[in-house]
Length: 229
Ligand code: 1GP
Image 1 (cartoon, rainbow, N blue to C red):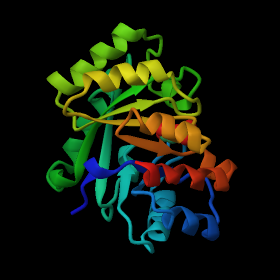
Image 2 (image 1 turned 120 degrees about the vertical axis):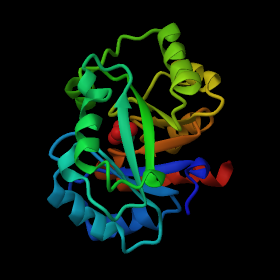
Image 3 (image 1 turned 60 degrees about the vertical axis):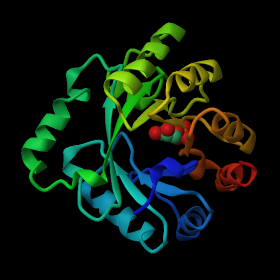
């Protein structure tokens, strides 16, 4: 079985976006540790199954980050289930989970399920808007959320999500300093090896998304953090 604690770099593919076979091959053969399929808008059973079957040609771990109950399906190595810690809407804490467990609780293999405590920090991102996240958080707030994730909820993963924007390094450091058990994922706005390295020096695992679709060469360069660590 794969050990997610060892993952330093993940590419996140959005099932609602198109990617050529060549680019997909380059991503999957890049020496990244894993692929996550996930997105915010227009994630459907059809586009998830299509992308899953294309990525499955390559020998690397594949996870689905669940954004709605309708597009969940068997066939992934892991299921990352977000709970948005700073959402003002209880649906994004546990409401969707309640519905999912009522429907599928009896068939879920919980060994494949990784619960992620999300902290959404870019107010302009789709994920912040659709989850009604309170992104106006100061240093004390993010530290307290990190403590909550690590000491109280005992989340396996805390995910600092700046989707579309490069994050505030001091806040990422502050969270990292509080986490002793919980693995820190950082994602958002990484477009160069330098940024990838800066965040990889602080977070356990970095997630690279959008640049795959806008500049594949730059995206591929971010994997080089693995050579220097
Ligand atoms: C998005 O955290 C990931 O969920 C990656 O962010 O798309 O900005 O790289 P970007």
